[in-house]
Length: 131
Length: 130
Image 1: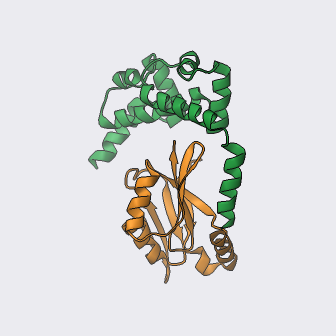
Image 2: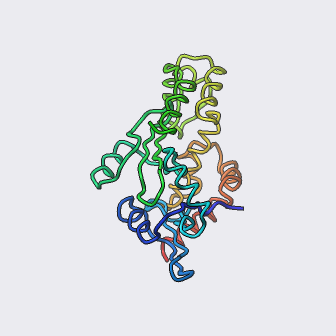
Image 3: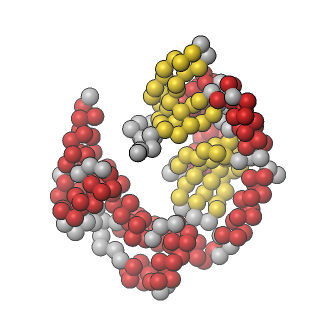
């Protein structure tokens, strides 16, 4: 067994694609239409295009419990997904300039530095730098 | 304050209140990062941070969830992949990443990556040229 995909539930796939590629800097990898308003849509890290894919999946739109769970996590400020960066401070500065909202500014937590931002699709995402 | 923010504060005070210990393990990790190509052992690492070697081993494992040796091996494999992708020969990669012999390097590489270094390099070159 291999780990190839992690899923992020998003409220609007097209909007998510714009944010994850345009703002965060991921690259679109797979885009397969599945029904009128849903796609199998994955993006990958620009530096690691053979690495794991992030599946931007439309579950909150189609499955009520998914929507409820996403909302509860969001309101509690909990990031369900995290990405590793070389410098949390640099990414924070870059994303802040692009208008991204942070609920946690760069913060040291022992051996890591973290920050949490709003992905505009219903999720908190955590950035992590190993110290 | 969100639930997550209060949890961060709570967990930080439980796990990371000993700043000296945190600095010791961070310093050790940086030393490994900068010297992964040399012969490294616990004696040397503990000398550098003025700790006993078993204390350092326990601390590193406590804060990073891995022993220094496991971390060092991960680092070396990661660097070996980078070199192989750039086209460096297997023997050269082996010594440049601090391994002792090409045969033990190849065995470990295959165990960790799923492919022997030569095969990994072939596939990487193929992917690049497509």
